[in-house]
Length: 250
Image 1 (tube, helix red, strand yellow):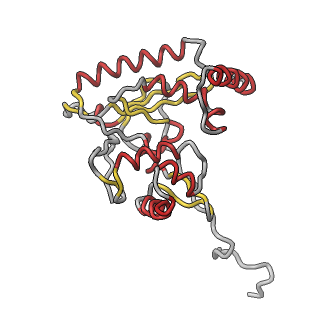
Image 2 (cartoon, helix red, strand yellow):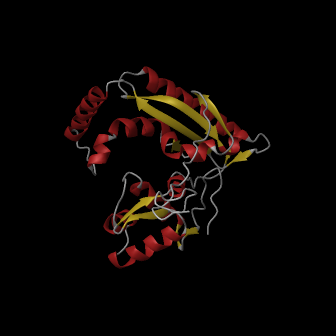
Image 3 (cartoon, one colour):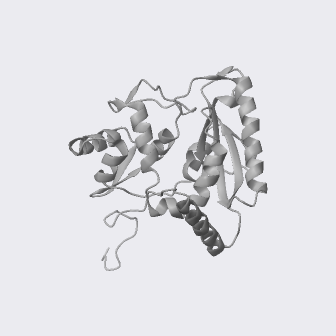
């Protein structure tokens, strides 16, 4: 088993599940846009031969990065989501990280003020080694953002999003699937905030809330909230209860 640090950093020359770490991370990044996927999608995302896809799925499942949801369907676990956001960038100084953070918050302000963007940043969370003052050299700057529609009217959002997509298609932009089209308004904001920075490790707050709220963190924008409470599992159809059947004679 590999160990993934809070800072979400991986060794670019290391391996995960006996496969190159960067290949696994990049594969998970491609897969996380799907709610569920089959082995053919995994084969394409990992760029492996068809004869190796089942072994790869078994290895990733053993590491807890993916799980089977149906006979021929898989999905990414929270650990897989976290690994997909990991960085392999070289460590940076605290001074550099603080400068990058200031630039990031300026981009957040730009998104929330600029009518071009269809989404707005509702929360910004800082976590990881940046919160530990004794750490002078950081692996990266761990941030999470919650992006919500700028307009309360969902139909209006989808109409404007579709118009934006059509404009991009006319310019030669290609979308891989319907999900990329449907969520373009969100992905556009997310990518702008990331800014192609190798220092920023950016996570989707909505997707990784339980992980982020479960570690030391600081809300830079928006209100903090308690970690989500997992619902207790329901008893199965044959689970024993303390109640007697109605026709029980004693």
